[in-house]
Length: 306
Image 1: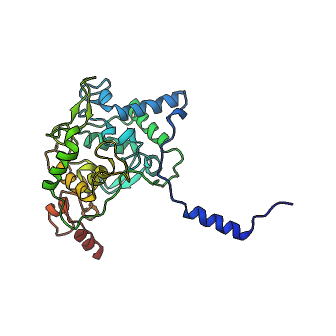
Image 2 (image 1 turned 90 degrees about the horizontal axis):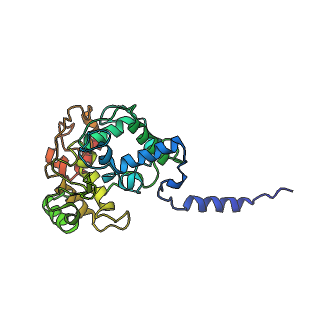
Image 3 (image 1 turned 60 degrees about the horizontal axis):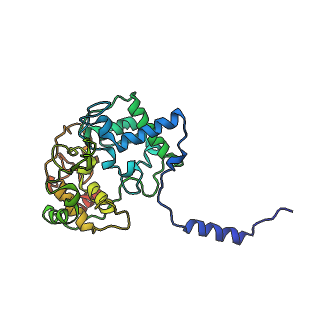
């Protein structure tokens, strides 16, 4: 006779399963990458993310199309750190429509956005060996993530809005206390003198940093990023900064000079712009200053009333 699980046991088991906390995404084990041509492509993609400057920087061995930073300067641990701007949901959510461009974007388009904005450089040919390797790596990282899903710990955490504008003056104090040691008093980073290529710690502003079109030039993105990842070595739930300190230091960093980019084609629908997008025109009457530094709740409330 086949054993039948009593109904009350089924219900208790289901209840326990639903009550179990969701675990943050963890990348697949790199030791599982096969020793095949496809596996070699994934490994090359990972190396391109970790050592972008070696291949694509001002002294790049493949091309000279970026500013000397590495992709993993913003996407920590080659895009594998939970809440470290990782790539866990790239393969599962792309292609997708993005308001910033007003179009459906492929993974290749998204990668080139980062090259042109965060690395203040030029696009890769979508059919190039390098682009194909980067895309293969992102697909490998998405192993086991269901199509359309974003696992816990993907991307960057969103902080609660402040009830005041973020304060660059207060942020400067945080920068001196927590960031200056690695990134330098002038925010120019520390170059990798051992190889003569790229940076040990990246510049946060100045000509070799991300330009004004980068995602981290939005305050909410930078604040969430630094809260869970900076100073280097901290992680989600083990922060050294308060939310207010994260917002303020983000305001200080993004108040410093950054390279320019033509943003005239960004956000073709004004009413789809994020509330912290620091460039008009807007679909509301709030100032550029408030869109850049906040407070953001009044902007969000006004948008909901429409």
